[in-house]
Amino acid sequence: MATLSVKPGQRFTVPDWHINANLISTNAERQRSASHQIRQETRTLRNETNNQTQWDEHDNRTRLAERIDSVNRWKETLDKCLTDTDTEIDALAKMKEAAERALQAKNLPLDVAIECLTLRESRRAIDVVKDPVEDELHKEVEVIDGAKRDLQQKVSEAFEQLCLLQEARQQLNFDHRGKMEALEIDRVCSSLNVNSPNISFKVNPTRVPIGSTTPQQWDQFSQYNADRAEAEMKASTELREAIALTIAQTNNELEAQRVATEFALRKRIREFEKAYDELKWQEKNTLEEIAEMEEDIRRLEEDLRKKMWDLKLAHTRLETRTYRPNMELCRDQVQYGLTDEVHQLEGTIAALKQKLAQSQDALDALYKHLYRIQTDTSYKANSLMLDNKCMDSRRKLTVPAEKFVPEVDTFNRTTNRTLSPLKSRQLELA
Image 1 (cartoon, helix red, strand yellow):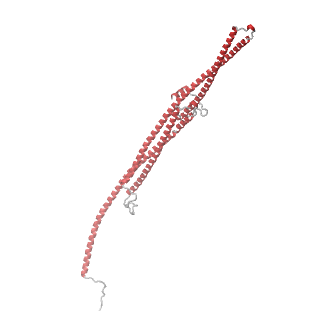
Image 2 (cartoon, rainbow, N blue to C red):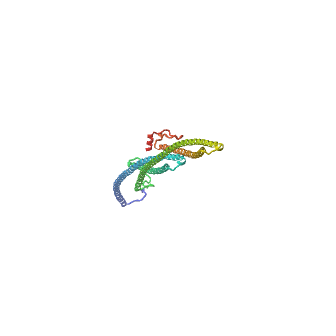
């Protein structure tokens, strides 16, 4: 009898088969229902996320545009501040150079004043007096020293202010460069889209970079830089005005002192000229008096010699008459006359000798005083020459250096030319 092969394995019943079929159908319907639910939810999520993404991207693009505008406004503000700061730096630098030139220009008046004081130290004897000219020259030196101190202080202040302006400018420039870079970066970000070729995933892009600031700190930083620059420019403007005022004041003070010094010097020169003329007049009169005195002494001596011969004659007559013999030796009228003549001549000779001695003493006194006059005249001439040299030297303060020609020879110390009376009068009235 033939035997049928049986497939090894588990055998299911018909109810199991029906149950399995129903189970598969049920599971299929449940899976489809779940899949349908997921598809609906997915569609809803896609719609919501797409809208949200579009709105988020739009909002961020708007925020980028607003940020670009904010940064650009600050950049323009910083541009203006930088331009104004550069302008102020140039203006202050020029004013500083003007103050330095004014300070340098004070060296010539100081040298001239010291030269005048040094020249007047060469005065001799009684002419070495502390006169108004010396007082004005010392005051002029003090005024110049004070002006130089004030100008030097302003130059130092200008240098310090320039340093502060440069520091403020560097800070502005640093902030400006940051704004430029930020603008470039934000503009690049604003130009990106999903089709851009250079977009990619980044590692931890949501991290907060070290050194990040808040919008308030960002705005305060730029505002501080702008305010600081404005404050330094305001201080610089005030300093420039103060420097200009100091230059004008020092120039006015120095000019006023120069006028006062030269007025005192011209007045002193007139006094010396008057004293010199007086001494020359006295010398002339003294010489004339000496000449007359010498002539009178000569005549006195001549008269004295004549009186001596007359006395000799009278003595000889008296002596000769003593040899008359006997009764002839009479004291007659001749004898009395000759005796009276001798006494008269002796008195006359004594008076003439006394007067001659007085005349000699007077002549000696005249010669001594003449020497004193001539000595004092030389002192006055020397002082007059020195003060004229001072006046000539001070012409450098009003005459440009390239046009200055000394009127007094610095070697011989004599004038190179004689001024006309009209010109002298003009200088006297100047």
